[in-house]
Length: 319
Ligand code: ATP
Ligand code: MG
Image 1 (cartoon, protein in one colour):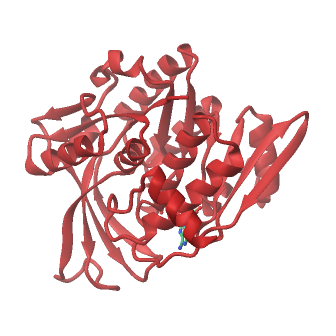
Image 2 (cartoon, helix red, strand yellow; image 1 turned 90 degrees about the vertical axis):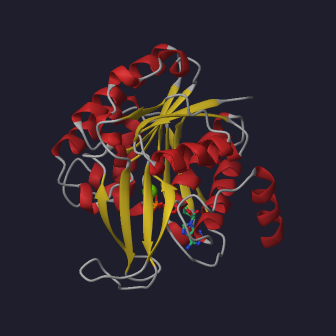
């Protein structure tokens, strides 16, 4: 089945520290600009797999914005829903690695062009063609975009479409009060929830609740599918069938870790598009693990995307 998926939120360029522990408090070398933004990486990975992919957002009228749009267009993403605005520059992120797994960020997102995206920017003709809407928690950085997300959810649901949600929590963004309130609203409409292992406790209803209990509660509240990303350990899928919770655990693939940025986005894009196109949860999870493993083996947020053929080749090699 052919699916058309849309997502909405930040488009930015990213600069990566060249050395570990370089930090931001002294001059150092950075590599970039790389096209980035979690929804942009997700949209590009959906397109790489050959599915319809539309991204809604804003860039500034500058070369960083043009770099982003051009790259997404080359990937096959429908970019007509990206507005170019004059009143702010394209967003940026600086990333400094402490080690291959731990990163610190300096984000310029809410005050950049993507922070000016509103519900009025949504191209309704494009949105009405999408059967699925994917939301990244990292995109919920302003009341304007949260309002746009609510509007998009209503439209996609009225069209009998589905919604997926990856909390993608960044510690640098947790102090944005609008964000946690929006989480509750979005979860109410979420069909496929894709937190990473360390994020699950944010969705606990009481202190010290264990992961299994949180999963149970979320399934009981109406989330149909929960996929927990566990880094190199792989991922798990939970759903309720005939009153019973079904669990599935798939191991990760071994991969040469070069840059963790984008793993969760590529994983999510691969799971959601393959699952919606008719793959079993187990096979979609296996392919998503491969997609995440391939993503971490490349430097740069959007440099580790993979096609279906590349994923299948990688899986065959590891067998
Ligand atoms: P992100 O930092 O992009 O937000 P995330 O926390 O959302 O990442 P992770 O669990 O880090 O998600 O990664 C998503 C998936 O990518 C994992 O479930 C796994 O399949 C794969 N993956 C991530 N890291 C590795 C690794 N080091 N080796 C192999 N596979 C990995
Ligand atoms: Mg993530």
